[in-house]
Picture 1: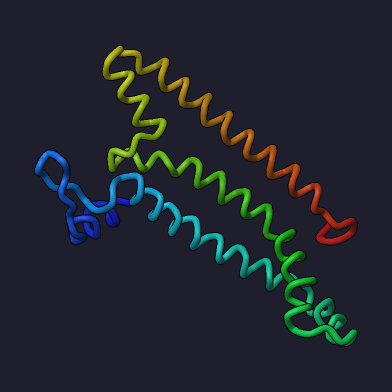
Picture 2 (picture 1 turned 90 degrees about the vertical axis):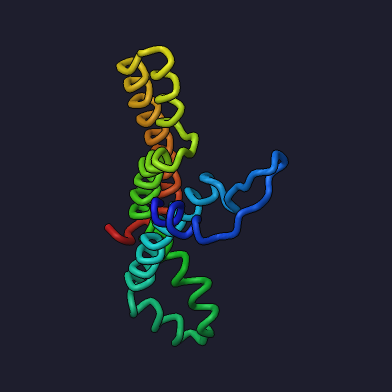
Length: 162
């Protein structure tokens, strides 16, 4: 995140503002979104690759024997099975991404930790704000894990992967 915001951001063009100054072309939100997308995307690609490789070769051979084309095999057999195998790892990566958003604080992106710092700077209530952040992240991650587990269970194939 720091590399994108400070190194690449300083190389980009500046745009004129209404008050006669200059502002960066991309703000802190854009750089946070870009860097977190690259961070999570790199892991997601590897998760999907391993999910595709986890599909048994015998299943693909059976589909070929039945006369299915490569596109049909990939669309109807490989991708659904790979998605089911990949869901637990994707859930883990999504939870990690939610927790990683606090790094945006370093580039003054107004996320929960940034806002909590603003509040505790004004009111000197650090303990209360840190407890609130802990509970807020527990709640966010809990809802996310609950939803992903429900999705995983709804897509489960009886007898496959057990």
